[in-house]
Image (tube, rainbow, N blue to C red):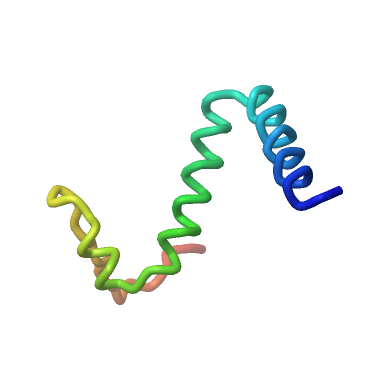
Length: 69
């Protein structure tokens, strides 16, 4: 199989699989892929590309002991 034939076969196979996937499944896959791509950026790049309404929320540390028996 030549490189061009392989590329076309992979495209056709991916298209066939996606046509049988639900919209929720396609969205979940796209979200996972985008998270993977974004994880390769630095913190500064991520902050720069974020919209104005998105902000970083830092968790507060608590010194509470767990409750139990």
